[in-house]
Image 1 (tube, helix red, strand yellow):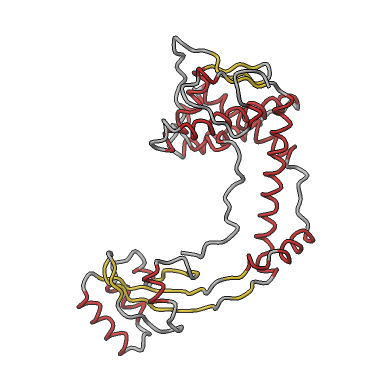
Image 2 (image 1 turned 180 degrees about the horizontal axis):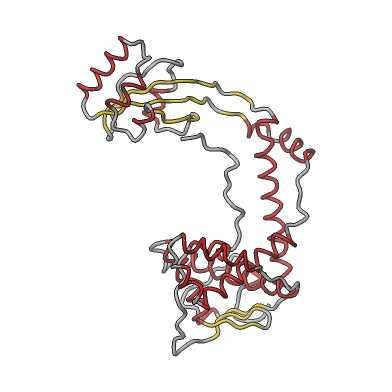
Length: 324
């Protein structure tokens, strides 16, 4: 298991519709009572539109269908999608056939249906078209000219040196067995072989998934392992093995292959991480500014009393049952 990194922020936090391609898409069923719940610009959206948007996303989140905050966030994402689509429409952005086909393939690979089924689903095709239009607007217009210079990265490094102190790192191997008697027998064999036979013994006796790899667990920074294991592992010098450690999984023997003490990382070690982080921050800031602008440009109306949940939206500009 490689060490976690401070910059692993994931993707920029954008509306949920950006990631719908990993969901299966349900067919829309128009209920008899299908009131208009949301208006964005001159477009109106009904209860069935929201139900379709919510359905798979809520099922993925498990047990959250009654959570007002979850539904509020999804509704805000729905509105953001429609705002971006209005902007994409102004710029006449259209996805190409290849991009549409690739998205359909990803949905099929994720269990969303077979190729023929997807091609025959007009609602799904429309959803994919809308997603690609919005992504195209962000990628080719809003984010197109966002850059992070080397000077920006160097300045960030100087101002945040404390963020780039790497903890102690150890490269660890493990032997895991079910009985203390067997663990003692293995320890005796290790002592006789001066620990050089650790990989061989791991392959022969360990019940851990890493047995075939000689017990190789990978590298860990201090703070990433359970405390009981850290106490046994981090004091060890390279090439030495631990005492027997008993846990709920069995009896462990660890060997430290390599150890790197805590140190200040150089700029060149973290340059790519800094560039990624700054770019994500600038994309997020550009997105937030665009949303603020679009909510002023296009009137938004939400029929709060008809939603079926308490809308707590995180953008005040899209609150209320009246045009803003």
